[in-house]
Image 1: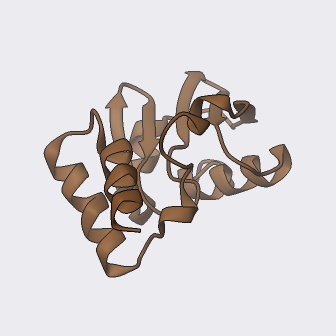
Image 2: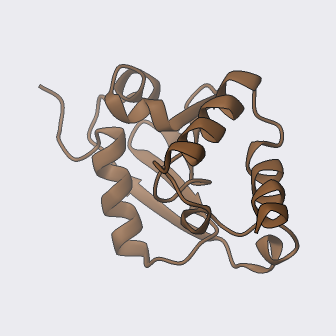
Length: 132
């Protein structure tokens, strides 16, 4: 069990800035997230089919301006302009990217259906409601 946990942590935090790696490890140790909530570490990870979903958003929409001040942003790491990676919670490993003024692209390598994935992302990134 300990070896499996060490492998999972090493896999989950690879390439992340130290502060986000520490946040992930803390959430894991506090039981906020569990090893089974993210994809399994090791070779099986690359064998999963990647699921891609496109979420249409109303204009004007800016993923960075919408996600940054939200409570959900604590589960995400900003990779670049309009690109975020979920590092904690359910669907950890999810990538969200704004590809145009009206489109959010989501990629996930886990088990879920497209409709549920699109709905969760719309709520977490603030695309569930149009601009004020």
